[in-house]
Figure 1 (cartoon, rainbow, N blue to C red):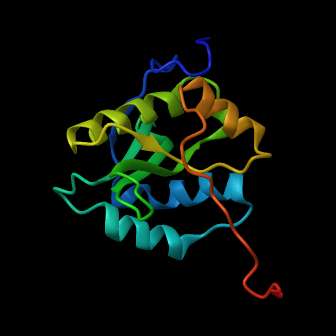
Figure 2: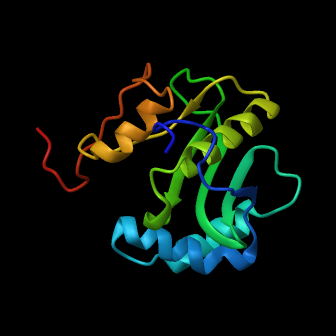
Length: 160
């Protein structure tokens, strides 16, 4: 078994672009982590991200013996508040039967290569601070705290 964070998976996978036929498996894998199948959400993502010649958008699949076992989705974004354009990873998932085998790391490395080709030098993501497994994965893949702090509030929270 490879150490966590290795970009070389210990299963012979094919890393390729997501295809329309991958929708059901992406919904299934995502639901294993989020607790709900978000078919309409993923249908919109597939519509927007599976367009050919989109250098700013990345949708990748990891397949083993022809079956999707993992995916990653991200895009190049430029935000306000002085942030330069950078790659953002906003979804990554691996079938639990294939976790901790380097699949997500291989997907992440290919995503970074594509972001590099799109002309950006940095990649970001957001993770719940109490999601130790996901935090460990990104830290093992050389992610560190960035220069921005995410803040939030409840919309209906009283002010003053």
